[in-house]
Length: 490
Image (cartoon, rainbow, N blue to C red; front, side, top):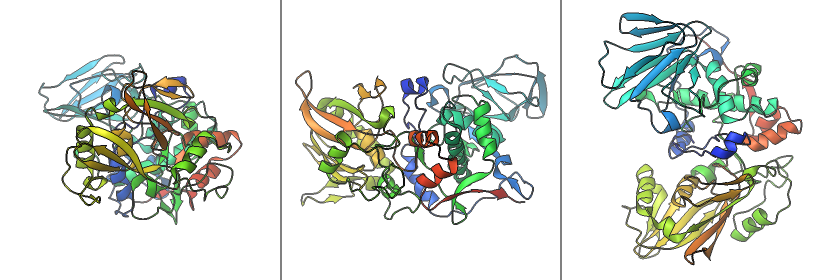
């Protein structure tokens, strides 16, 4: 993620614009919280919308919290809308009609007599002109509800799950891909949304999900006939194990092997449907290959000739050189952020050389970085930062990618070069070098993009091109699972 985090999740803007990859589903810190919640079997709340016996979950209403431009926040100082057809605006008991194309503005600080509800005529959409997505103002199905407080407006888009998925699929995976890959994405997105709708993550806003990488990206790219077909052709279908929907994590690109849920989320035990395996024909083919030792992982990343599903993807391999001084800047603040999220993931070494959970101490001058542990997949699960004052152990793939942020350093990958706020993945090895200015630096060679567990979107696309069905793809990525239709009752 998800939990949400996400927040950046990762966004490879240039590759996305080309359509090679999309906003891949990278979550931030809350992903770990979400993962733990998903394993507890939390009882499903009563949904306020009653559905007839046998209707698929796609008809259920869902409420989406809309982010500001750039997905930087959820509070809007100004909201401007217009309809593709007639709009009905309710302000408390007062109801007004506006013709198509008429712009209506709601300003922070202005007093309104009640709840603001915006509805489009049947078959029409509401365009939010105060939000920009990919150089366009997004249009929404359903209705919009505006709530004002001191921080600004929150915007909730209420619509059916089916309509929501129409605009999730293209935002997560370019609809230029094979239809079977799009169907796999639709089923993953539906199953993931099902779990989110059961949680209370966005309860304070009166929402089920948001539209960013904290959940699933929604309406960053508008729906089209192919995304609608992928949703309709898989209506109500989810990934289930023992009859119960599992949490369907997905990400952009693997490094040739997927990570287990345990490696990614640092859980005490394995997660049955999220297993590490080689990304090759047949999960059993090399699935027990152990890349936990640095030498084995280096050979795999730099010399291995295995033909994996992701091998042709831009982010299959990447590298970046980051100066030690650049990494050191703001390191204490980054560590504090990680610590506040989960203190058990940031440990301080005591005088006896043991890492302990205690109040975070200042690192001092960063002198050295070393890899403490890798999972069997090669994913780094713990990193040690050796400072002049203390040695601090950082656990968890997201935290590791965060503390080693490349900043302004260019990351080189198959599609060119770019900058990112996080390392593309935690599947990497590193060498101490001297940069072009003669300063100490680390040369980082990595593979893949995203957290690394669940379905690789690039891998799924390649499998589809090779003739695999969406069911084949999903059963491959989620061990011991099947695809089944889920109905809801009164």
